[in-house]
Length: 179
Length: 202
Length: 200
Image (cartoon, rainbow over all chains, first blue to last red):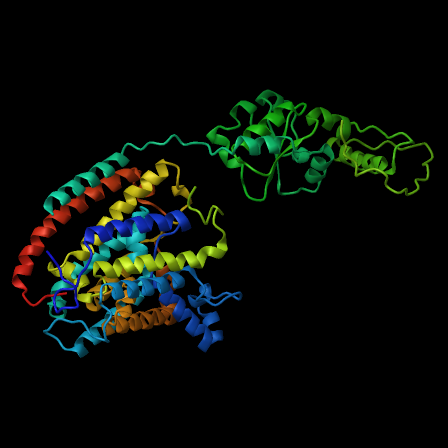
């Protein structure tokens, strides 16, 4: 299983997934130790939506029962833990990409059986669905499934099982997208 | 590669298996001895009987009186709305909920203030805050509130104010009628307060 | 004694610096493990790349076991940490919808950020989709507000609900996870034999 550096046209080098998992688990422990909460990611996009709504149509945002929860007079809704963490995720990814030589020009990743356009449409719809689902689910795979399960939260385990379970259930229908 | 994985698998199994045996005695979180000692020598935990009486009369919702004597004494006589937690069960889990409620002030009292003080030290050690001791206990309560002593003429003005308050409190708590004072009331001139506010000690 | 910030050991002002640092570590680990590629992520559903399973399960069992040990040594007070609240029906619904989204998009929010960082356009589109999706949710919120709040069980843990100690779950989960690692190793070898062109 020797992977070579992606500077040649071979498989990209990824660290051993178990090592990655151990590091991630330790990171979760560290995060809980410092903050009392786990990691998360979808909350940052939610903050972006709320901020946008607040900037474009403040009155409507205040009235909206969902957005208004996150609007405060003192500070922008972007001024939250998850937004900064998500910024960090971006930069961490960038750092790793640079180190392992994966930062390249804009590209679309897809199975060879479909076109770029198909892939992008699927990505868009997938994002929309995931966005909607993450609000009902009170988190995404990082916040609810990973951190929730790690802290033994019932909700976390439910999300984890159903998220991946549903994925397996519908995988066959979208096989062309990937292989 | 495979050998490493086998080793890691076993390691992880052992660690996870180990968690099954991690039984903790639910430790009462204790504060450090130095901190406790420092708190003990502060007199700020004491409240006077006057203060307690005022809080009861004002129906102050933050007041929580805890009688630390035994049940029998509690039945015979207790302060208004006091609850009874005998000293020997003060840290029993049954009574945990009474302490540490945000916003409430727990005031311990007993016949004198020795038992109440002990209750205070014990709960303070467990890092329970907002607790107080009624100085002088019920003995002082009787001397100041139930049967307040009229101050003599040389006493400072504040003593008279305090006595007025105590007479009112006496009425409140015992329903006793105030005796009409037949003596001509001496004109009380407002004098500069020479002393600190009345401490109402016994 | 953790957790540090809720216990006041680290002042609130450091909050966002710490968030940033933890995020950087998170993003680094994700990207380095291969989560910046949607095909890698989707692989767990088709058997040609189990990186998601390996990283995710390992992380959960390490974190579970670690937290229990930390609690035992008194380094962390598990009663003071945030437990995800359980809203039964909406969470079930949300998870199913997310499952679809996961399969179609090949990303989840965290991984999409790392993929954007290395230039993946599909990740960018996915994130835009996230934005749109949450916006739709927000706008349509009054329609399903009651449903959103239904099934509230509180911030319950597995132990709260079943009475089974947390360590049993940690151990059971570990066993299942470790077993799955060995099994999927075999499956992956088989599936990959059939896919020659896969090289991410």
